[in-house]
Image (cartoon, rainbow over all chains, first blue to last red; front, side):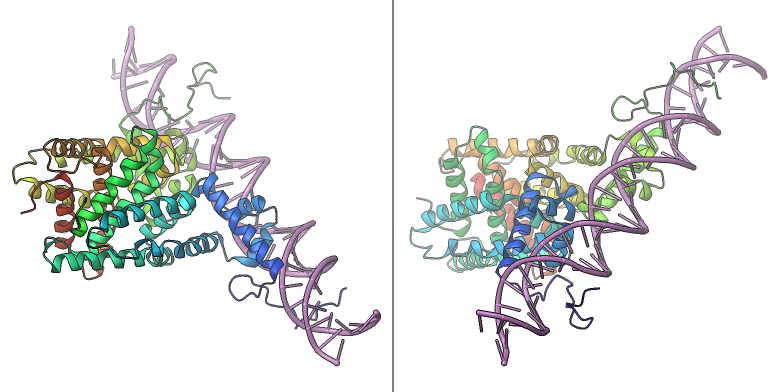
Length: 217
Length: 217
DNA sequence: TGTACATCAGTGAACGCGCGTTCACTGATGTAC
DNA sequence: TGTACATCAGTGAACGCGCGTTCACTGATGTAC
């Protein structure tokens, strides 16, 4: 019998939250997250599993449970890590003719974002739409800066009479974000038809500007 | 040994496509589809299974394989059955001041459609976005009438100078559909905040009209 | 610089379970004569 | 109206497999003195 550990000193070892990680541990955790992302990209959500992830990461299922409670926790973490990447895309001055250029930048930021994180964003949105509050929160956190900014621009435009007062700022900004997300998600499909990248950007940018009551030239 | 069946007369029995169905068979098939839909609504996509569906339908897994090749085939069938439900929502005359009323009807049709088929539509869109061609086709078939009509209205508006020629008709119609789908998918969430159903409809309808170059009052 | 211990990291092996899938069969319903 | 057969519908039972999950353990790396 080994005596390295006394019965009392054995750590709870239950994975999940409160584990302190050294550099080696952080690396393994990162590998597991990468494996989760890859599985998400390659295979369908229906056959995503701890076993699969561990295989891709080149480790054992047991190791997975050191770092995550279950598969969904790992996916959630991926979604949360992404959240910070979209904030500054709406910063700056929108009014006085700068709107169209700002809108173009926003569209391009969304497309780039989706090209990088397509698979994760899709399941995040699915889980959120299905009603999982953790994923709803992750989605909200990611999009809130953009939504807020756009909503306040609409509000201003309504106040100044540039936009019909029947338009609700929050609904309008949600609509615009949905345009940005969908076109980003589908940009490759569209380009495979006869639509150029430029046509996507220009069209989306103009829809944004129109809805904000900004001039489009 | 039983002699009811000779070795030759035994049917291939391999389920799937070419099976001729009597009324009893059609009913069972329908029960399995309903069970699939319910499982999709209640549980996550990750633990949807033949066993689960058979349980909900009150039958055995073996029966399932009489009618469908696998779970995805059943889900696909659900998606295809839905496709015909949205067509006439864009019919009629849009120009000459009737646009706003037409747009309202369109928004309401989408919301009703999504309220009925939320779960199926979500996984259809996920599968399509992930690249599964069967679901892409199902999605396309469902939305094509709407997309086409909207695109031709944009085209007309561009030709008549009511809409900026930088706007691409197909991209614009895809954008509008994404607004309709997202607001429909989220209408309950929005209403749980301070947004009224009416605000959703009015805002969406105006975004549609603006993009079509129609007057909004 | 060495020794003792704590902490960090990782996994082999086992378990039981539920799933997918198929076979061989039964019973119920039609249909031809 | 009965008999013979074909077709339609359904399932019990079995199988093997892979998954989730945990335990008890090992080894590697830090740190106190």
